[in-house]
Length: 212
Image (tube, rainbow, N blue to C red; front, side, top):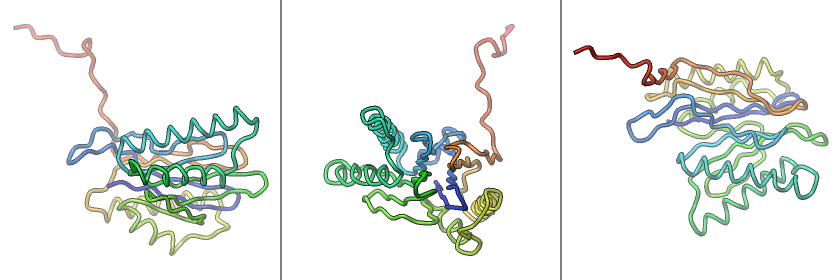
């Protein structure tokens, strides 16, 4: 029951994602970071099949870095979004990636921006977006409370309202979420919202010794 959503505020973009790694009826871990930092001023939140999500987001990250290495200048957020859309469109005719993406970034010339890119290579520049089962609730909350001139604190408060709604309304809701922000100071992790922590893995030294 994945959920990724994001919004643009006054001078920043914010992306939120659940952190559950799930297969069938099993939860493998609850601290999986699904928001990739592409470069100093770009974030990519992704949902979808775990293998496709990890492989494709790393592929985009390395190609963004390669472009900057070759040309000496970084890709703009719009250029990175169009590159991502092009790779998904190419793969769509061969071996499609089952991954949906929210791409956020900040450019000196144009400021913050947010792009909606789905698995069939649809690309839209938007003010707010969401993917996954949690989108039914997060989009409803953002439709009601979102404003373009929101401060960081107001946007995080709205994200918390979305998370609370998902946890209380979704039948199998992910317990933990990560919030990341990108603005003129760069892309960074802002906070985690955790209700479940992974149990520590016991080592051989910590295992009880049988005396029988």
